[in-house]
Image 1 (cartoon, helix red, strand yellow):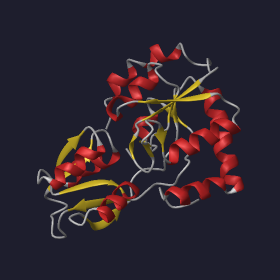
Image 2 (cartoon, one colour):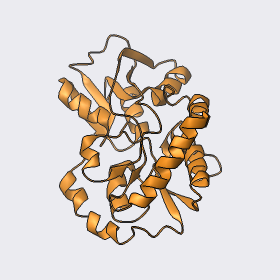
Image 3 (cartoon, rainbow, N blue to C red):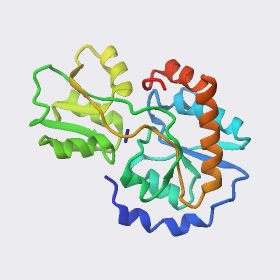
Length: 240
C-alpha cells in the first residue's frame, strides 16, 4: 500500500539499535487514519483490521503489546529511532523499504489500487492525480505521466478531488470503495492497478527474534483459516 529518502532514514538506524531485544512491552506503531485497515474509533482507540489482527498476533506470540499512532510520512524513521517496535499500518513490502527496515511475511496479498474521481471522463495518464506522500501509489503516479500532487493524509487526497484541486486520487481499493459508496458525487474510474508485494509488519533489522515470533503467528493464522476470515470481515484484500 503505502519513495522514501533512504539517507535520512538510515541516520536513525543506529539510535534504534539500542532497543533491539528489549520487548517486555512491544509497541505497535500504526497510522490510525486509513480505514478499514486502521483508524481511531469514537472512543479514541485504534480500531480496524490491523488492530484486531495485531492483538491476535500478540496473543499467539505471547507478547504484551500496546498501540502507538504516528503520522505516515515519518512512520519508518520513528520505528528505526526506537519510538515503537513494529509498523502495522497497511504498509506494502517493497525493495526500497526493505533496505532500511525488515518485514515479516505478508499478512495480506497485495490490495489492488483504484482511481476515485468526480466524473468518468478524467485523464488518468495526463491529468492531476492526488496520492498520499510516501506511498507506492505516489510513486506510480510520478512515473505514469500524470501530474502528481501529494498530501500528508488520506483524507486530504479525497478533499483535493472534491474541491477540484485534483482530477482523481489513486489509493487502495479497500480504502476508496466505501468512500465511493457513501458519496454520490464520487466514483471509481479506470482499471485497477496492481502494486506492491503484499502487506507486512515492519520491524528493525536488528530485531530478528521479534520478526520470527510474528512470522510464526502470521503463519499459524494462515494455517487455521483465521487470517482469511479476518480479511473477509474487514474487506481489506483478496484472501490467501
